[in-house]
Length: 219
Image (cartoon, rainbow, N blue to C red; front, side, top):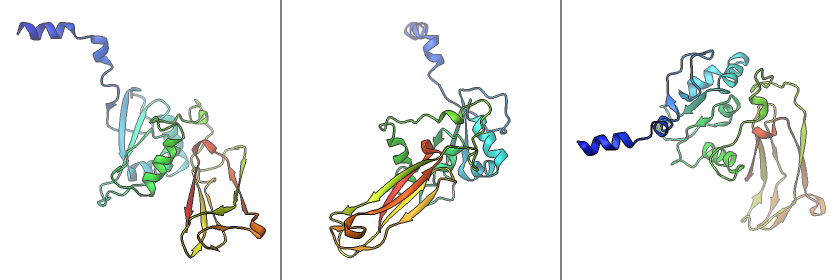
C-alpha cells in the first residue's frame, strides 16, 4: 500500500494532463460554439456528405474544422471493407479520414498518394486559404482562384506487355479541377506516341493545386 501511494505521488500532473490529447465528443451542430480544440467528433461518411452537400453546409464545415478536430469513417454497409474517396472530406476540412487499410482499392491508393507528398510522415498541412477567419474558399464552386497550367507529354513506354496500349490521366481534387484524358491507342511492349515519336501532349488547368492529385493508368 505504501509503494502504491509513493508511485501516485511521483506522477507528474502536467504530463498526465496531455496524455489524452484528443477527446472524443459527440457532434452537436455546425455552429457549435462550446467545443474545445482538443475535442474530436466522428461522422459516418454518409452523414458527413449530407452535412456538406450544399454551399452553406460545406463552408460551415470548413470554418468548424479550423478550430476543431473532425473524423469521417466508412459507413456500415461497406461489408466488403471497401473504401470511400477521401478527397471530398479533405476539401471540407476533415483532418482524419479513417480507411480500411486491409483493402487495397482506389480509395486506399488516393489516401496513400496524398500523404506521400510530405515524405510519408503522417500529416499534410491544410492550405492557408482554408484557415482564414472569413474564408472565401468553397469546396463546391470557384471563388476567384488564379489558374496554373500543367503540361504533360506522353512519349513512350517500355515493357508494357503485348497487345494494344492506352494511357489515361485523371486529375482529382476540387470539383472544378477534376478532369480526365485518354491517349490514342498504340501497339507493342515498347511503344511510342505521336507522329515521329514526338509524343502526345495534354494541358491540365489547376486552380487548387494543394488539394490536387494526378492518377495515371495503363489500359
